[in-house]
Image 1 (cartoon, rainbow, N blue to C red):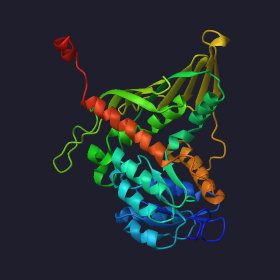
Image 2: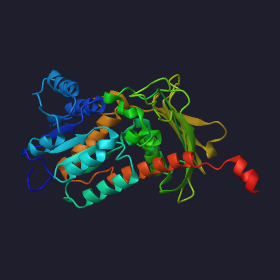
Image 3: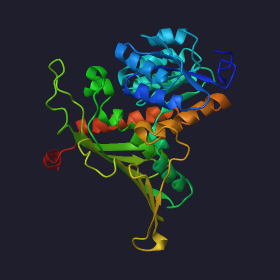
Image 4: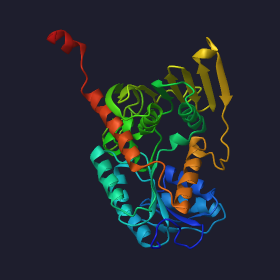
Length: 372
C-alpha cells in the first residue's frame, strides 16, 4: 500500500481486491467486484482447496487474469497485491482475521455478523479506531441496500408517515444452507440464529427507529429444521423460528417475526413502519413499496414498484450486495469514511445476543402465580 490508504496503491483508479474466504458468500463478493468498473480481484485466500479453485474459476471465467491464491490470509496480506479485502470467512473467525487485517492499512469490508460475541465486536471496533484515519473499514450489512428497503428508509427520512412509532419486520424463508464443514449448524460458531441471520434486521430497526435499543424481549426455538442431522454425534442447536420485541430510547417499538421453514411465502422479507401520519411497507421479493397516509382515508394505499437502477449483478440479495460494493469502492477512491461502520455491526450483534439471552431466561406464568 501507499503512504495514504485513501487511494489505490497501483497509482490508478483500479482498486485491487483480495477476498478472504471463498465459499458461497466469498464467490458472491467476487461476482459483484467483477461487475464494478475499475476493480480487479488480484488475490484470494481460503484453507479449503475446492473453494480456492471455485474462486479462481469465477475470475478467469469472466475473462480476467487468475488471482494469486493463498491458503492463509496472512500470506495474502503480506503479498502487497491488494488495496482492499473482503472478509467472508466463517463467523467465529472474524475477530482474528479482522484483527490481522486491521494491523495493516488495507481497506476492508467484513461480512455480517461482525463477530459472534459483543466482547469480540468491541475488540475490533477499538482496533479499527486505532488505525489510519483514511482507511475505509466497512461493515457488510447489505440489507440496507435492498431497493424496496432503501425506498422505505427514504420515505421515513422525508417525513412521509410523521413520527415513527412501530417497526415490524418479517422474514419467512428457507432453512440455513449447507456450508463448508457444516460450521453454521452450531450456535458456538455462528453466534446463534438471532446474531447470524437477524443482525441485518436489527440494523434496519435501528435505522427506521432513529435511535438505539434499550430493552429486548424474545421467544424462539428449534422446532423443524436440522433435527435429524448429526455432526460428529452432535445435533445442530440453531433456532429456526423466533419473535423478538425491541424497545428504543425514543419510545419506538420494533418487532421481528422470523421463520426459517416458511419458504412457501410470497415475500421473503416484509418491513412495515407505522407513524402517527401513516404507514409504509417494503415487500422485498415482489420489490414493492406501499405508502398509506391517514389523511387520504381508509384503505387508500399508493403501491409503487421499485426498480433496482444501476444494478449490474443481482446475485443472492436482489442487487443489494452490488450497490453496497459501489459505495465501498467510492469511499476508497474518494477518500470518504464508511457509510456502514463496525459500530453499526456491534449494535446489531448486541441486539441478537440480548434476544438469545431473553429466550434463555424467560419469565414464566408459574413464577408469577407462585410469587403473586
